[in-house]
Length: 71
Image (cartoon, rainbow, N blue to C red; front, side, top):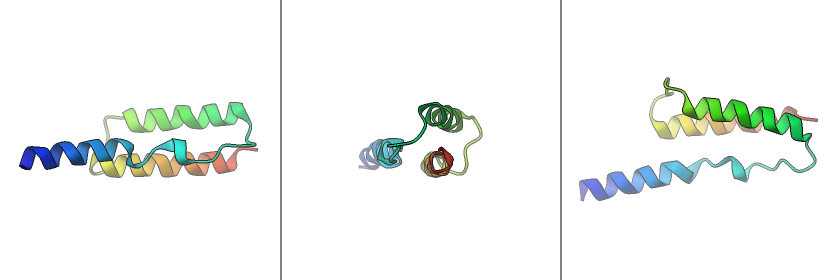
């Protein structure tokens, strides 16, 4: 049971904070690519912010802020 819960929480953490949910319509494509590169670097860093789930949330939040600054 313990392993089932661990596997389920890992699966949910992987998709809970997707950047696909963030609307990039009408934004400059080059700026969006730069935001995506920063997001990618954020999620692949070895210095996590608490748990993996918290890291994904923080990286998604940063991506959202970045996208909102794009013209």
